[in-house]
Length: 508
View (cartoon, rainbow, N blue to C red):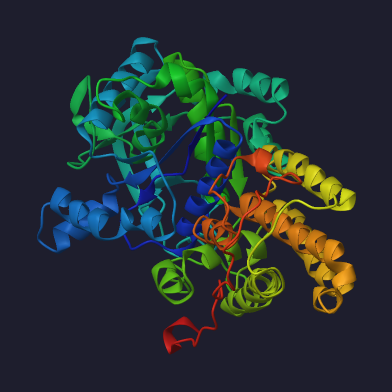
Protein backbone atom coordinates (compact mmCIF):
# COMPACT_ATOMS: atom_id res chain seq x y z
CA UNK A 1 0.00 0.00 0.00
CA UNK A 2 1.01 3.62 -0.55
CA UNK A 3 0.05 6.61 1.55
CA UNK A 4 0.69 10.15 0.31
CA UNK A 5 -0.10 12.91 2.81
CA UNK A 6 0.22 16.67 2.55
CA UNK A 7 0.05 19.54 4.99
CA UNK A 8 -1.14 22.88 3.69
CA UNK A 9 1.76 25.00 2.54
CA UNK A 10 2.22 27.86 4.96
CA UNK A 11 2.25 31.60 4.35
CA UNK A 12 5.68 33.10 4.97
CA UNK A 13 4.39 36.47 6.11
CA UNK A 14 5.24 35.65 9.75
CA UNK A 15 7.07 33.13 11.88
CA UNK A 16 5.43 29.72 12.51
CA UNK A 17 2.56 29.55 14.99
CA UNK A 18 1.43 26.69 17.20
CA UNK A 19 -1.38 26.15 14.67
CA UNK A 20 1.16 25.51 11.92
CA UNK A 21 3.01 23.13 14.23
CA UNK A 22 -0.27 21.36 15.08
CA UNK A 23 -1.02 20.50 11.46
CA UNK A 24 2.55 19.45 10.77
CA UNK A 25 2.69 17.23 13.86
CA UNK A 26 -0.65 15.58 13.07
CA UNK A 27 0.45 14.82 9.52
CA UNK A 28 3.75 13.37 10.71
CA UNK A 29 2.01 11.18 13.30
CA UNK A 30 -0.32 9.79 10.64
CA UNK A 31 2.52 9.05 8.23
CA UNK A 32 4.64 7.38 10.92
CA UNK A 33 1.70 5.12 11.78
CA UNK A 34 1.22 4.11 8.15
CA UNK A 35 4.92 3.40 7.88
CA UNK A 36 4.53 1.08 10.91
CA UNK A 37 1.92 -0.80 8.91
CA UNK A 38 4.41 -1.33 6.10
CA UNK A 39 2.97 1.28 3.74
CA UNK A 40 5.19 3.15 1.29
CA UNK A 41 4.70 6.70 2.55
CA UNK A 42 5.40 10.22 1.31
CA UNK A 43 4.90 13.38 3.40
CA UNK A 44 4.87 16.79 1.74
CA UNK A 45 5.04 20.18 3.43
CA UNK A 46 6.34 23.59 2.41
CA UNK A 47 5.69 27.28 1.95
CA UNK A 48 3.30 29.51 0.00
CA UNK A 49 5.36 32.50 -1.08
CA UNK A 50 3.48 34.46 -3.75
CA UNK A 51 1.10 36.34 -1.46
CA UNK A 52 0.44 40.04 -2.07
CA UNK A 53 1.32 40.86 1.50
CA UNK A 54 4.74 39.23 1.09
CA UNK A 55 5.44 41.53 -1.83
CA UNK A 56 4.23 44.56 0.15
CA UNK A 57 6.38 43.79 3.18
CA UNK A 58 9.45 43.26 1.01
CA UNK A 59 8.74 46.52 -0.79
CA UNK A 60 8.39 48.38 2.53
CA UNK A 61 11.75 46.97 3.66
CA UNK A 62 13.34 47.89 0.35
CA UNK A 63 14.39 44.36 -0.61
CA UNK A 64 13.62 42.00 -3.47
CA UNK A 65 10.68 39.72 -2.57
CA UNK A 66 12.63 36.56 -3.44
CA UNK A 67 15.46 37.68 -1.14
CA UNK A 68 12.89 38.32 1.58
CA UNK A 69 11.23 34.90 1.30
CA UNK A 70 14.57 33.07 1.00
CA UNK A 71 15.60 34.50 4.35
CA UNK A 72 12.39 33.80 6.26
CA UNK A 73 11.97 30.31 4.80
CA UNK A 74 15.47 29.23 5.74
CA UNK A 75 15.42 30.83 9.19
CA UNK A 76 11.98 29.68 10.30
CA UNK A 77 9.90 27.50 8.01
CA UNK A 78 12.42 24.81 7.17
CA UNK A 79 13.11 24.71 10.92
CA UNK A 80 9.50 24.02 11.86
CA UNK A 81 9.38 20.33 10.85
CA UNK A 82 12.87 19.78 12.23
CA UNK A 83 12.00 21.28 15.60
CA UNK A 84 8.83 19.20 16.04
CA UNK A 85 10.47 15.99 14.74
CA UNK A 86 8.42 15.79 11.56
CA UNK A 87 10.15 13.72 8.89
CA UNK A 88 8.93 15.11 5.57
CA UNK A 89 9.99 13.61 2.25
CA UNK A 90 9.98 16.92 0.39
CA UNK A 91 9.72 20.59 1.29
CA UNK A 92 8.12 22.50 -1.56
CA UNK A 93 8.38 26.23 -2.15
CA UNK A 94 6.04 27.91 -4.62
CA UNK A 95 9.05 29.87 -5.88
CA UNK A 96 10.65 26.59 -7.06
CA UNK A 97 11.15 26.55 -10.81
CA UNK A 98 9.70 23.04 -10.99
CA UNK A 99 6.52 24.20 -9.29
CA UNK A 100 6.12 27.31 -11.44
CA UNK A 101 6.59 25.29 -14.63
CA UNK A 102 3.93 22.77 -13.56
CA UNK A 103 1.44 25.49 -12.53
CA UNK A 104 1.64 26.93 -16.01
CA UNK A 105 1.12 23.51 -17.60
CA UNK A 106 -1.83 22.81 -15.31
CA UNK A 107 -3.52 26.13 -16.08
CA UNK A 108 -2.93 25.71 -19.80
CA UNK A 109 -4.82 22.40 -19.68
CA UNK A 110 -7.80 24.10 -18.03
CA UNK A 111 -7.65 26.96 -20.52
CA UNK A 112 -7.49 24.53 -23.45
CA UNK A 113 -10.54 22.71 -22.05
CA UNK A 114 -12.54 25.95 -22.28
CA UNK A 115 -12.97 26.41 -18.54
CA UNK A 116 -11.26 29.80 -18.32
CA UNK A 117 -12.57 33.12 -19.63
CA UNK A 118 -11.75 36.79 -19.15
CA UNK A 119 -14.00 39.19 -17.24
CA UNK A 120 -13.88 42.07 -14.77
CA UNK A 121 -13.78 41.45 -11.03
CA UNK A 122 -15.16 44.28 -8.96
CA UNK A 123 -15.44 43.68 -5.25
CA UNK A 124 -13.71 43.12 -1.95
CA UNK A 125 -10.37 41.42 -1.37
CA UNK A 126 -8.76 40.58 1.98
CA UNK A 127 -4.99 40.72 1.63
CA UNK A 128 -4.64 38.84 4.95
CA UNK A 129 -6.61 35.85 3.62
CA UNK A 130 -5.57 36.45 0.00
CA UNK A 131 -9.25 35.86 -0.67
CA UNK A 132 -12.06 37.56 -2.57
CA UNK A 133 -14.89 38.37 -0.16
CA UNK A 134 -18.63 38.93 -0.30
CA UNK A 135 -20.44 41.17 2.18
CA UNK A 136 -21.95 38.02 3.70
CA UNK A 137 -18.43 36.80 4.58
CA UNK A 138 -17.76 39.86 6.77
CA UNK A 139 -18.60 40.72 10.36
CA UNK A 140 -19.38 44.41 10.81
CA UNK A 141 -17.64 45.03 7.51
CA UNK A 142 -14.43 43.32 8.68
CA UNK A 143 -12.75 40.05 7.81
CA UNK A 144 -13.66 37.71 10.70
CA UNK A 145 -10.20 36.11 10.70
CA UNK A 146 -8.05 39.25 10.51
CA UNK A 147 -10.28 42.02 11.86
CA UNK A 148 -9.37 44.22 8.91
CA UNK A 149 -11.52 45.91 6.30
CA UNK A 150 -11.06 44.26 2.89
CA UNK A 151 -9.88 46.42 0.01
CA UNK A 152 -12.15 47.23 -2.91
CA UNK A 153 -10.54 46.21 -6.18
CA UNK A 154 -11.65 46.34 -9.77
CA UNK A 155 -9.57 44.57 -12.40
CA UNK A 156 -9.84 42.53 -15.56
CA UNK A 157 -8.62 39.02 -14.95
CA UNK A 158 -9.28 35.38 -15.83
CA UNK A 159 -12.07 33.33 -14.28
CA UNK A 160 -12.48 29.59 -13.79
CA UNK A 161 -15.92 28.14 -14.58
CA UNK A 162 -16.49 26.65 -11.15
CA UNK A 163 -20.24 26.88 -11.67
CA UNK A 164 -19.95 24.30 -14.46
CA UNK A 165 -18.70 21.71 -11.96
CA UNK A 166 -21.50 21.91 -9.40
CA UNK A 167 -23.24 18.72 -10.50
CA UNK A 168 -20.00 16.76 -10.83
CA UNK A 169 -18.92 17.82 -7.35
CA UNK A 170 -22.27 16.87 -5.85
CA UNK A 171 -22.02 13.47 -7.57
CA UNK A 172 -18.50 13.05 -6.20
CA UNK A 173 -19.66 13.77 -2.66
CA UNK A 174 -22.62 11.42 -2.99
CA UNK A 175 -20.46 8.61 -4.36
CA UNK A 176 -17.78 9.03 -1.68
CA UNK A 177 -19.29 9.77 1.73
CA UNK A 178 -15.82 9.62 3.33
CA UNK A 179 -14.25 12.06 0.82
CA UNK A 180 -14.12 14.73 3.54
CA UNK A 181 -13.80 13.97 7.25
CA UNK A 182 -15.06 14.58 9.90
CA UNK A 183 -18.62 14.06 8.68
CA UNK A 184 -19.80 17.51 9.77
CA UNK A 185 -17.11 19.07 7.57
CA UNK A 186 -18.30 16.89 4.69
CA UNK A 187 -21.79 18.25 5.27
CA UNK A 188 -20.47 21.81 5.38
CA UNK A 189 -18.63 21.44 2.07
CA UNK A 190 -21.52 19.69 0.35
CA UNK A 191 -23.95 22.32 1.58
CA UNK A 192 -21.75 25.05 0.14
CA UNK A 193 -21.73 23.29 -3.24
CA UNK A 194 -25.48 22.69 -3.12
CA UNK A 195 -26.06 26.39 -2.42
CA UNK A 196 -24.71 27.29 -5.86
CA UNK A 197 -21.17 27.88 -7.07
CA UNK A 198 -19.83 31.09 -8.54
CA UNK A 199 -16.90 31.31 -10.92
CA UNK A 200 -13.71 32.66 -9.35
CA UNK A 201 -10.60 34.47 -10.51
CA UNK A 202 -7.52 32.41 -11.31
CA UNK A 203 -5.35 35.46 -12.01
CA UNK A 204 -4.47 38.89 -10.71
CA UNK A 205 -3.73 41.88 -12.90
CA UNK A 206 -0.94 44.36 -12.21
CA UNK A 207 0.79 42.07 -9.71
CA UNK A 208 4.51 41.62 -10.36
CA UNK A 209 4.93 38.79 -7.81
CA UNK A 210 3.66 35.36 -8.82
CA UNK A 211 3.57 32.69 -11.51
CA UNK A 212 2.85 34.32 -14.90
CA UNK A 213 -0.32 33.18 -16.69
CA UNK A 214 1.04 31.18 -19.66
CA UNK A 215 -1.20 32.76 -22.30
CA UNK A 216 -1.03 36.28 -20.83
CA UNK A 217 2.17 37.11 -18.98
CA UNK A 218 0.82 40.51 -17.98
CA UNK A 219 -1.06 38.66 -15.23
CA UNK A 220 0.01 36.24 -12.50
CA UNK A 221 -1.73 33.19 -11.07
CA UNK A 222 -4.04 33.89 -8.15
CA UNK A 223 -2.05 32.85 -5.10
CA UNK A 224 -4.60 30.28 -3.87
CA UNK A 225 -4.66 28.50 -7.23
CA UNK A 226 -0.86 28.58 -7.31
CA UNK A 227 -0.79 27.13 -3.78
CA UNK A 228 -3.29 24.30 -4.28
CA UNK A 229 -1.45 22.94 -7.29
CA UNK A 230 1.61 22.25 -5.11
CA UNK A 231 0.15 18.93 -3.96
CA UNK A 232 0.49 17.63 -7.51
CA UNK A 233 3.44 19.65 -8.79
CA UNK A 234 5.78 18.43 -6.02
CA UNK A 235 5.50 14.86 -7.25
CA UNK A 236 6.93 15.83 -10.64
CA UNK A 237 10.27 17.04 -9.30
CA UNK A 238 10.66 15.94 -5.66
CA UNK A 239 13.10 13.24 -6.75
CA UNK A 240 15.61 13.94 -9.49
CA UNK A 241 14.71 12.26 -12.74
CA UNK A 242 11.50 10.71 -11.38
CA UNK A 243 7.84 11.56 -11.79
CA UNK A 244 5.99 10.23 -8.74
CA UNK A 245 2.48 11.07 -9.87
CA UNK A 246 1.56 7.56 -11.00
CA UNK A 247 2.99 6.06 -7.81
CA UNK A 248 1.55 8.44 -5.21
CA UNK A 249 -1.21 10.67 -6.57
CA UNK A 250 -3.84 7.89 -6.56
CA UNK A 251 -3.17 7.62 -2.81
CA UNK A 252 -3.28 11.34 -1.98
CA UNK A 253 -4.66 12.58 1.35
CA UNK A 254 -4.72 16.20 2.52
CA UNK A 255 -4.84 17.38 6.13
CA UNK A 256 -5.85 21.01 6.65
CA UNK A 257 -7.43 23.52 9.01
CA UNK A 258 -11.11 24.38 8.84
CA UNK A 259 -10.45 27.98 7.72
CA UNK A 260 -9.28 26.76 4.30
CA UNK A 261 -11.99 24.14 3.77
CA UNK A 262 -13.68 25.88 0.82
CA UNK A 263 -10.50 26.12 -1.23
CA UNK A 264 -9.53 22.50 -0.64
CA UNK A 265 -12.88 20.72 -0.59
CA UNK A 266 -14.60 22.65 -3.40
CA UNK A 267 -12.21 24.66 -5.59
CA UNK A 268 -9.39 22.11 -5.69
CA UNK A 269 -11.43 19.06 -6.80
CA UNK A 270 -13.06 21.15 -9.53
CA UNK A 271 -9.69 22.38 -10.81
CA UNK A 272 -8.39 18.81 -10.87
CA UNK A 273 -11.41 17.53 -12.77
CA UNK A 274 -11.03 20.30 -15.31
CA UNK A 275 -7.34 19.54 -15.80
CA UNK A 276 -8.06 15.83 -16.24
CA UNK A 277 -6.70 14.51 -12.93
CA UNK A 278 -8.23 12.26 -10.32
CA UNK A 279 -9.29 13.98 -7.10
CA UNK A 280 -7.53 13.08 -3.81
CA UNK A 281 -8.65 10.02 -1.90
CA UNK A 282 -9.56 11.99 1.19
CA UNK A 283 -9.33 15.33 2.96
CA UNK A 284 -9.30 15.63 6.74
CA UNK A 285 -10.29 19.01 8.15
CA UNK A 286 -9.19 19.69 11.72
CA UNK A 287 -10.36 22.40 14.07
CA UNK A 288 -8.50 25.21 15.78
CA UNK A 289 -6.43 25.29 18.90
CA UNK A 290 -8.11 27.96 20.96
CA UNK A 291 -6.64 30.32 23.53
CA UNK A 292 -8.13 30.98 26.92
CA UNK A 293 -10.52 33.52 25.36
CA UNK A 294 -11.79 30.86 22.90
CA UNK A 295 -10.21 32.63 19.95
CA UNK A 296 -8.00 30.91 17.42
CA UNK A 297 -4.35 31.06 18.43
CA UNK A 298 -2.88 33.15 15.62
CA UNK A 299 -0.52 35.98 14.75
CA UNK A 300 -3.35 38.23 13.66
CA UNK A 301 -5.26 37.71 16.91
CA UNK A 302 -2.15 38.66 18.89
CA UNK A 303 -2.48 35.61 21.15
CA UNK A 304 -0.10 33.25 19.41
CA UNK A 305 2.13 30.71 21.10
CA UNK A 306 5.64 30.24 19.73
CA UNK A 307 6.12 26.50 19.10
CA UNK A 308 9.90 26.91 19.08
CA UNK A 309 9.80 28.29 22.64
CA UNK A 310 7.64 25.39 23.80
CA UNK A 311 10.02 22.86 22.26
CA UNK A 312 12.97 24.63 23.88
CA UNK A 313 11.33 24.26 27.29
CA UNK A 314 9.55 20.90 27.12
CA UNK A 315 11.11 19.09 24.17
CA UNK A 316 9.47 18.10 20.91
CA UNK A 317 7.80 14.88 22.09
CA UNK A 318 5.81 16.49 24.94
CA UNK A 319 4.62 19.25 22.59
CA UNK A 320 3.57 16.65 20.00
CA UNK A 321 1.74 14.71 22.71
CA UNK A 322 0.02 17.81 24.12
CA UNK A 323 -1.44 19.19 20.88
CA UNK A 324 -3.00 15.85 19.96
CA UNK A 325 -3.94 14.77 23.48
CA UNK A 326 -5.59 17.94 24.72
CA UNK A 327 -7.91 18.64 21.77
CA UNK A 328 -9.94 15.93 20.03
CA UNK A 329 -8.51 15.91 16.52
CA UNK A 330 -11.07 17.40 14.15
CA UNK A 331 -12.72 19.62 16.77
CA UNK A 332 -11.95 23.07 18.15
CA UNK A 333 -10.54 22.92 21.65
CA UNK A 334 -8.72 24.81 24.35
CA UNK A 335 -4.94 24.33 24.26
CA UNK A 336 -3.77 26.11 27.38
CA UNK A 337 -0.16 26.12 28.49
CA UNK A 338 -1.32 25.04 31.95
CA UNK A 339 -2.69 21.97 30.20
CA UNK A 340 0.69 21.30 28.63
CA UNK A 341 2.43 21.42 32.00
CA UNK A 342 -0.22 19.25 33.63
CA UNK A 343 -0.04 16.57 30.94
CA UNK A 344 3.75 16.65 31.02
CA UNK A 345 3.81 16.05 34.78
CA UNK A 346 0.79 13.79 35.25
CA UNK A 347 0.72 11.62 32.16
CA UNK A 348 4.17 11.68 30.60
CA UNK A 349 6.37 11.97 33.69
CA UNK A 350 4.18 10.08 36.16
CA UNK A 351 2.06 7.55 34.26
CA UNK A 352 4.63 6.60 31.62
CA UNK A 353 8.03 7.81 32.80
CA UNK A 354 7.59 6.53 36.33
CA UNK A 355 6.44 3.15 35.04
CA UNK A 356 9.61 2.78 32.97
CA UNK A 357 11.78 3.84 35.90
CA UNK A 358 10.08 1.48 38.36
CA UNK A 359 10.08 -1.47 35.98
CA UNK A 360 13.74 -1.21 35.02
CA UNK A 361 14.77 -0.58 38.63
CA UNK A 362 12.93 -3.70 39.83
CA UNK A 363 14.41 -5.84 37.06
CA UNK A 364 17.88 -4.58 37.98
CA UNK A 365 17.34 -5.06 41.70
CA UNK A 366 15.46 -8.35 41.84
CA UNK A 367 16.79 -10.13 38.74
CA UNK A 368 20.21 -8.51 38.23
CA UNK A 369 18.98 -6.92 34.99
CA UNK A 370 17.75 -10.15 33.37
CA UNK A 371 14.33 -10.96 31.91
CA UNK A 372 13.05 -13.90 29.88
CA UNK A 373 9.63 -15.14 28.73
CA UNK A 374 7.73 -16.72 31.59
CA UNK A 375 4.22 -17.98 32.35
CA UNK A 376 1.98 -16.33 29.68
CA UNK A 377 -0.47 -13.63 30.76
CA UNK A 378 -3.58 -14.16 28.66
CA UNK A 379 -5.23 -10.97 29.87
CA UNK A 380 -2.29 -8.88 28.67
CA UNK A 381 -2.17 -10.82 25.41
CA UNK A 382 -5.82 -9.96 24.77
CA UNK A 383 -5.28 -6.27 25.62
CA UNK A 384 -2.36 -6.00 23.19
CA UNK A 385 -4.15 -7.77 20.35
CA UNK A 386 -7.16 -5.51 20.82
CA UNK A 387 -4.98 -2.40 20.94
CA UNK A 388 -3.19 -3.28 17.70
CA UNK A 389 -6.48 -3.71 15.87
CA UNK A 390 -7.96 -0.58 17.43
CA UNK A 391 -5.00 1.57 16.35
CA UNK A 392 -5.61 0.66 12.72
CA UNK A 393 -9.29 1.54 13.05
CA UNK A 394 -8.52 4.81 14.80
CA UNK A 395 -5.97 6.00 12.28
CA UNK A 396 -8.12 5.01 9.31
CA UNK A 397 -10.83 7.24 10.81
CA UNK A 398 -8.29 10.00 11.70
CA UNK A 399 -9.09 9.56 15.39
CA UNK A 400 -5.59 10.55 16.45
CA UNK A 401 -6.62 11.75 19.91
CA UNK A 402 -8.72 8.69 20.69
CA UNK A 403 -5.79 6.47 19.68
CA UNK A 404 -3.65 8.01 22.43
CA UNK A 405 -6.37 7.26 24.95
CA UNK A 406 -6.45 3.64 23.78
CA UNK A 407 -2.71 3.35 24.45
CA UNK A 408 -3.09 5.14 27.76
CA UNK A 409 -5.62 2.57 28.93
CA UNK A 410 -2.83 0.02 28.61
CA UNK A 411 -0.40 2.31 30.46
CA UNK A 412 -2.91 2.55 33.32
CA UNK A 413 -3.39 -1.23 33.29
CA UNK A 414 0.36 -1.75 33.63
CA UNK A 415 0.52 0.71 36.52
CA UNK A 416 -2.34 -1.12 38.26
CA UNK A 417 -0.58 -4.42 37.57
CA UNK A 418 2.46 -3.17 39.47
CA UNK A 419 0.35 -2.27 42.50
CA UNK A 420 -1.77 -5.41 42.41
CA UNK A 421 1.14 -7.86 42.03
CA UNK A 422 3.56 -5.95 44.31
CA UNK A 423 6.86 -7.32 42.97
CA UNK A 424 8.67 -5.94 46.03
CA UNK A 425 6.61 -8.29 48.16
CA UNK A 426 7.11 -11.27 45.85
CA UNK A 427 10.87 -10.71 45.96
CA UNK A 428 10.95 -11.38 49.69
CA UNK A 429 10.22 -15.10 49.29
CA UNK A 430 12.08 -17.40 46.89
CA UNK A 431 8.91 -19.49 46.61
CA UNK A 432 7.47 -16.67 44.51
CA UNK A 433 10.38 -16.62 42.06
CA UNK A 434 8.39 -17.93 39.09
CA UNK A 435 5.56 -15.47 39.71
CA UNK A 436 8.03 -12.59 40.07
CA UNK A 437 9.70 -13.53 36.79
CA UNK A 438 6.32 -13.49 35.06
CA UNK A 439 5.31 -10.11 36.49
CA UNK A 440 8.58 -8.43 35.55
CA UNK A 441 8.50 -9.90 32.06
CA UNK A 442 4.90 -8.76 31.56
CA UNK A 443 5.77 -5.23 32.65
CA UNK A 444 8.71 -5.12 30.27
CA UNK A 445 6.71 -6.66 27.44
CA UNK A 446 3.81 -4.28 27.98
CA UNK A 447 6.14 -1.29 28.00
CA UNK A 448 7.83 -2.47 24.83
CA UNK A 449 4.44 -2.66 23.12
CA UNK A 450 3.49 0.78 24.50
CA UNK A 451 6.70 2.23 23.05
CA UNK A 452 5.85 0.84 19.63
CA UNK A 453 2.25 2.07 19.79
CA UNK A 454 3.30 5.56 20.92
CA UNK A 455 6.24 5.90 18.54
CA UNK A 456 4.32 7.98 15.96
CA UNK A 457 3.57 10.51 18.71
CA UNK A 458 6.81 10.21 20.67
CA UNK A 459 9.52 9.40 18.10
CA UNK A 460 12.39 10.36 20.46
CA UNK A 461 10.97 8.72 23.58
CA UNK A 462 9.97 5.35 22.09
CA UNK A 463 13.54 4.30 21.18
CA UNK A 464 14.68 5.38 24.65
CA UNK A 465 12.15 3.04 26.25
CA UNK A 466 13.21 0.18 24.00
CA UNK A 467 16.84 0.94 24.77
CA UNK A 468 16.17 0.92 28.51
CA UNK A 469 14.66 -2.56 28.08
CA UNK A 470 17.60 -3.60 25.86
CA UNK A 471 15.27 -4.38 22.97
CA UNK A 472 15.89 -3.63 19.27
CA UNK A 473 14.29 -0.47 17.87
CA UNK A 474 11.71 -2.29 15.77
CA UNK A 475 8.66 -0.04 15.41
CA UNK A 476 6.53 -2.23 13.12
CA UNK A 477 2.92 -2.27 14.27
CA UNK A 478 2.87 -6.03 14.64
CA UNK A 479 5.15 -5.43 17.62
CA UNK A 480 2.03 -4.40 19.54
CA UNK A 481 1.56 -8.01 20.56
CA UNK A 482 2.29 -10.26 23.52
CA UNK A 483 5.55 -12.10 24.09
CA UNK A 484 7.75 -10.27 21.59
CA UNK A 485 10.21 -9.03 24.20
CA UNK A 486 13.41 -11.00 23.76
CA UNK A 487 15.26 -12.50 26.71
CA UNK A 488 18.03 -10.13 27.70
CA UNK A 489 20.28 -9.00 30.50
CA UNK A 490 22.05 -5.80 31.44
CA UNK A 491 18.88 -3.82 32.20
CA UNK A 492 19.68 -0.95 34.55
CA UNK A 493 17.46 1.62 36.31
CA UNK A 494 16.41 4.05 33.56
CA UNK A 495 17.01 7.76 33.87
CA UNK A 496 13.79 9.81 34.04
CA UNK A 497 12.22 10.09 30.58
CA UNK A 498 10.56 13.38 31.46
CA UNK A 499 12.54 15.17 34.17
CA UNK A 500 11.05 17.96 36.22
CA UNK A 501 11.06 21.30 34.43
CA UNK A 502 11.52 24.72 35.97
CA UNK A 503 9.58 27.02 33.71
CA UNK A 504 11.06 30.31 32.51
CA UNK A 505 8.73 33.30 32.55
CA UNK A 506 8.39 33.25 28.75
CA UNK A 507 6.80 29.82 28.74
CA UNK A 508 4.18 30.44 31.44
